[in-house]
Image (cartoon, rainbow, N blue to C red; front, side):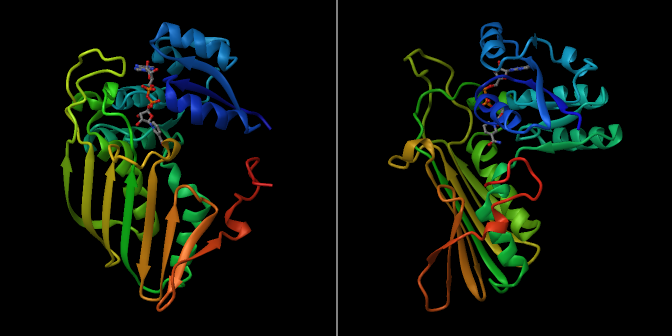
Length: 307
Ligand SMILES: NC(=O)c1ccc[n+]([C@@H]2O[C@H](COP(=O)([O-])OP(=O)(O)OC[C@H]3O[C@@H](n4cnc5c(N)ncnc54)[C@H](O)[C@@H]3O)[C@@H](O)[C@H]2O)c1
């Protein structure tokens, strides 16, 4: 079996805590190149990630015949141009969310990837949690009855200091909405199908005009809170709410997450902190904790199978 030779473009936080560990535990994949314009970080990752080929220029990755696929984990405003350079050079692409900073960017990326005939995907990871897959099964098998209502809440207790590039509208597109609530929009549609209509609101709670070490910086231009009310094509209604500035919801950095589906026969709940359990209850009962059956803990044949 030949390995997929992967390059990381953007050697920051998410590459370090998700993507590189993911590549390392899969014998079908190999990290062959790293790209980041930050020279100091590049040299640090070269040694930490034990990878010889490093560059500051993503075009060098796109045009490198020894790279099969790229993971793009850069600030949001760069995703579009980097993706296009890579797919046009025939690389398979996994680009972080949000794909672009506008619908037009995301649609263009999709069309160019289709034209190039390469594999392309984004990193909406929550839908793969065992409890989420089990919720989907309960919906599809009719155990919850007709889905009537979906509710998602994601609260984090982060500092009120600068969010770096994430608080610039031009660089990030939006705040909580593109960073956090976007995942909840994705898994809601994975569970219940397309959203037909919606309205929403955003709000800013803090100026974030100081860095963590107390230096004055440009204030935030993006939302700290986002909320949506919508209706799915299947008829169910949905409510979403997210914020990164909710005091007391720190929970070792994981925050609070709850997502529930209320159907005509039963209700079921996903909690981020308990991915191998759900809560479930029927009329007249109280929600009860239920282990996710073993078949939903595994992806058949995957080297990542839970043993
Ligand atoms: N799927 C998830 O759960 C998840 C979690 C965290 C972050 N993300 C996404 O991942 C992306 C990166 O987030 P992060 O927290 O790692 O940010 P980060 O700021 O820690 O890292 C971004 C890195 O990209 C580098 N970079 C900037 N321009 C570049 C370019 N032109 N070419 C190559 N590298 C470049 C920066 O120097 C930096 O090292 C964002 O789009 C974010 O929304 C997704």
